[in-house]
Length: 214
Ligand SMILES: Cc1cc2nc3c(=O)[nH]c(=O)nc-3n(C[C@H](O)[C@H](O)[C@H](O)COP(=O)(O)O)c2cc1C
Image 1 (spheres, rainbow, N blue to C red):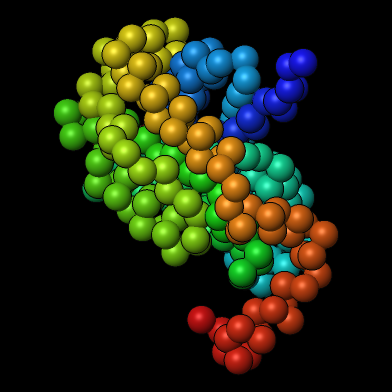
Image 2: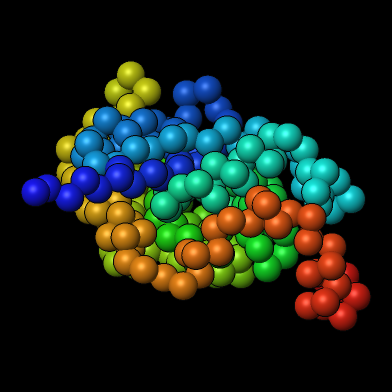
């Protein structure tokens, strides 16, 4: 008898809203290259600017959908460009939304694979370091192993998709590590039912921080 294994559900985030974004092209290339046992859904990061006044149970619909997509996934893949030696605002904004409610973020314990791209040979490595730093603060589980840094990206994309074979192979190996990590049992993964608890946000925050805003 064969055991039926549910496909691994991954969410992808591109740190650029540009129509012909190379970051998105990498996600699209990976979508094509994925094994049948995994699916990658690309999230829309066109979210409002983070405002704590608008957060909580009545957070904007797009934000709630984004958080729910992360919560329902087994892991996330982030592909970021580098803006002025750092993380693009679009991605930082999305991660800030995803980081709340405090202590109940859908990213807590979630395996996340980070990649960076650039037309330059530096491959966005400084932005990638900053994304990892943010994920550490959120308590996501960063997928370790060889850093996936894709320089000279303009020569590696055709028709809006990553086609460079060696880059695809290297990135696929990262995805395999992500899938393996998502299948390993981790206690914090069992907290994934946060959307039902969204009303507890304000109380939990005050209890944890003694009523003081950070
Ligand atoms: C505001 C801005 C700042 C940038 N700063 C950097 C940088 O610091 N390092 C770098 O390698 N590329 C930098 N670039 C070039 C981006 O890496 C390049 O435009 C990339 O293709 C953007 O990602 P996308 O194709 O996913 O939109 C910058 C681009 C913009 C628009």
